[in-house]
Image (cartoon, rainbow, N blue to C red):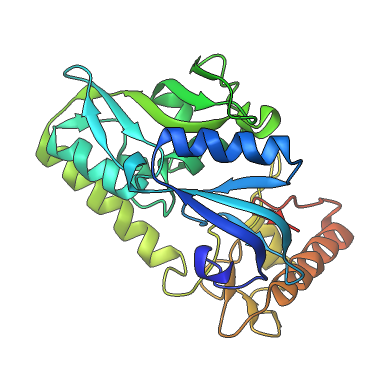
Length: 280
């Protein structure tokens, strides 16, 4: 699964299937349910790490059929779950629609962003989602979830609890000035590139923000910036990121995460919670 995740590390899954349309997705889910096969969906793999021991189940990935954008009105866009956030933000820019600028540099898919209520620079998916169309875990039902029904929280949504799979999302945006939108996206991406280790494989921010603190500052204050385990390193550019410096195994990454957690807890009494989805 290292080929399908942004950490570029991790073991094998028993099987991976890429579904090319909604009927294939439902058929695969029904089969997995009937045969009692463990299964999960991945998007762009930008917030996921498979353990070196692998995953004894079926990994499902959405194909190009789910990579589309349709205009429902002047300010409402329906976007397929496999489209990258960066692509969606650029397409919104082309329509002079504002609201998605914060997402332009997040390296994930629409579906993954909805699953975890991705956010950056003061914006979150919950701020712009009108509704989410999803398929049930057993592949037998479909429904639309309203923004309220999605129960968005900090890096969480109802999809993490009920197992439904988002296939497309309708966004409520606002008409804006194209030049101003472009300028804001350029500024945010420049800030991201200057402050985050974008040149190394990672899963973005490794830890959730603990209430009342910033994970990166706690890690740096604990003297852990630059700490390495095998090929994994606490980034010297931003301590909130664990990166694959080169040849890191999933075990290296997980051991470093645990070491950071334990050290920060010993020094400050704060237990950091991984933001990364760990499978296996």
